[in-house]
Length: 480
RNA sequence: CGGAGAGUGGCGCAGUCUGGUGAGCGCGCCUGCUUUGGGAGCAGGAGGUCGCCGGUUCGAAUCCGGCCUCUCCGACCA
Image (cartoon, rainbow, N blue to C red; front, side, top):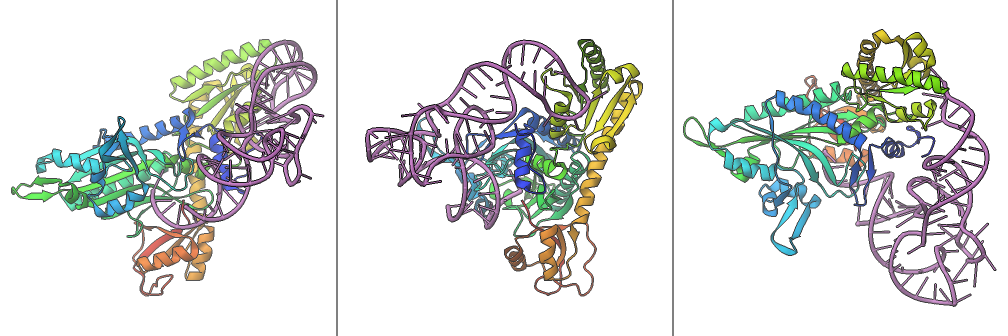
């Protein structure tokens, strides 16, 4: 292992892949574009799953599981859907040593197969709404991949719901968008902007796509989750119909929404620094690591004894804590190792601390002495809990300030060009796909979203590119 | 899929241009002793058919051809 990481500001991409591998979150696999999620990275995903799953259940959803394989014909039933996903499909043509009658696709998303099942299950307005989520893997054959951000196979959850009315579907779509935003900000400490995707950026087959967008440490944007109101498009393609109270046959209104392992990429890129990861305490697999320090054998047994008691005490208090009692590494080495792996708090216990019935707490988000404090054993659990809370909030605050600092309101096209070099540009826009395409071509920035939270367009506001009357404000930025 | 770079013990690299008698260096790993409050020191040791296939040659990590994989930059995308 090399002693030092790549510098974050010098080469962000290299720093990113470096951190992931050194922190043992993931590794490259022998299969092109695929990655192996290692135990530490998977533990982070499990923490994400728990925090989200709880929110899904609280909003009335149930988990289920649909198959990995989908008949090829299914994906072709919704025209925009086919067009959007065809280039990315993995197709199975052979099975059991024989050519298949009909090829199967490996799901890139499950609207098709779930739509098919919903058409069997839904008969009456009494069956609605159907609120199902699944945790699974999907495959999209990407040209260029990147650990966590874009891999051929990735893990995610996809919620699929069916409703009696447009209003209910829209309400559900926005409810889940809110769930994602709440999760991102409170659990991952990643500040997000809730918005609507433009026509050209929306999900293939959706009526409206909503998303949460976040700013990464290199000031590029990352779509961190999406929520789609699918209207009746999939209901019509898959025949999802019900009889209403008046005995009239109606098509359902459906939604889908998803968040993937990509969010791990966001956590890395939003919070990480030159020393490595900085994990938000609420999701960190290890919230505190105890590092014992000693010289003689006598000190060793005393310190380890206290370290083990401290471990038990903190575990009993509900803290995810780890005791690093490896003999082969020095304390200094361990300090660096756990900082690289982003553990929010280090608990140092040495002879001095044993003698004085105290520990030293060092927080990951503040460097050196500034982040250190001495706490009596008696007050440890409470002090640590408070500290974790403080770190969680500090990470969020830092990320939000960073985003605000790099957010601009360009008044003309020249200013927009400069703004997207530096971060997010909130710009008035005429709403045309043409302007959007021009902006992308000329600045490499895409329309990330039209923020939901925005003032009415003032009189006389003009599109930043074409000068025609502005319809709304959009965020333009370079994106992952 | 277009452009660039790279594949040599577990990791990072040198050697390749100019083929030849030692495949080398740093980190890691193993053993022992001394160390341990910010990436310890010394001594001894293990580990590589040089990405794969083919060709040229008395002889190939090195030259030639093909293929595979990875990274970075673009177009596509969660």
